[in-house]
Image 1 (tube, rainbow, N blue to C red):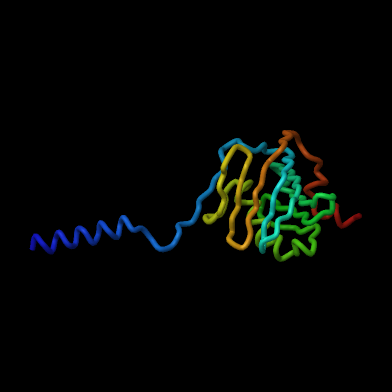
Image 2: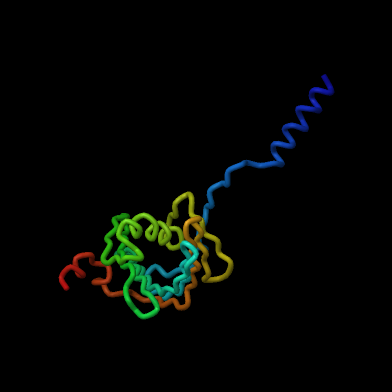
Length: 169
């Protein structure tokens, strides 16, 4: 009896020390008060996919009442993605590109946006924060190394958060 209890103890101990075969989800939450409720964040990013790297710029307008408006540009200023996420979660893709098609923006860009800047990020946000204003999102198929280079705390124009304003152009 004593020997069987010892064997069971060591088997359980080995199982506990070995851990799980699957990785637990990453529950990332940015520090409280890190981003203004109303403001503009200017970002620089290095996007890596399929062994290729792309330097991108980002402009994220935040509004308590209007939501989040993310505009991603390449180095020469061409808009690669423009998306508006309303406070109720509705997503409006204002502009897409070959690099970031609409389905990609809806499925991944918005998920990454909510992981870092959302008030209640999803359970599995593959984000690490190596330093202040530095975020790394690694989804396996791609990696985004994001740095916030400037933060402006001020209300942004209401038209920035109006999905119909871009249709009037």
